[in-house]
Image (cartoon, rainbow, N blue to C red; front, side, top):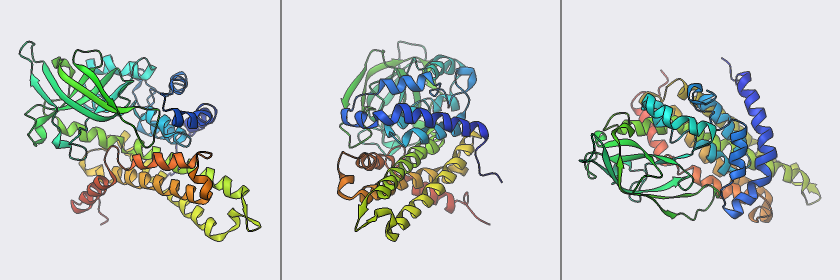
Length: 391
């Protein structure tokens, strides 16, 4: 068995590491404090060809797959989770298209993401439907004025990148808003400039500033039949898309944990207390060691999950393995950032050091794209159903 990344991915990681140090690291704190969308970072990713990492070559991408995008997100998230989210958003809204979209849809919407001329966002959650996906109320009704078209009405919330997006992947009820059967939900591509598409409120967030999160209001939006993704009644597509994303979300957690621990380690090596460097105290050294072990464990879980997703292994029988990566890495981000704050003491609580930003950013990862509790439920299902078994 080989536990090392192939050379092309190691080369990719090294090139992105340089870019992250040169472009992302100097801007990370300013992005957090201002909350302004970092257009310069987007342009740097665009110039480096990183926006198409997770997309096939035939649509302008580089074909590096989920593993390549996972490697990239880990590197930039060491300095800025907003930058990591920017890369993640090249794959989250495009995932359903890659899984079930028509050739026409892929040709129309994917090249713009790869070359940076367009951006997209993903709309599933609603004010009354977060973890309870089947509780969504956005409805899609047949449009009597068109041949097979639909009319969408409802409000999506907590959409990352909602203000910058040119188009959206939207899930709506096609069998009445009260229906809870899986064949009552369908995915659509909705373009920003269509009549009835409006931005709602932009959220004031605890962390991950710089990438807007907010509402999208759909007021009688007419969607042509060719913009239905996959089959009508394709709720399974939402789950497949989210399953395939688990390693990329996990990579944000690993990168954050690495960045927090590296910063704190450098601090305790230079800071003196009681006539010694803080790093000389056994209790401090043990905490650093335990965190380092967890980071490496998370990386192995996540790289395995990314390789599985690239092989198309994101259906039910593989969900437990993908959820393990997301659960462990996002919870690790919280623990590692908390440790970093503690190691810096009072200084860690102040904006003079980035660890308080890591601490705020980390919590988001345990909530987005399936909470930690949802992941534990999926892992438990895998064990109880025998998908994850050891005999």
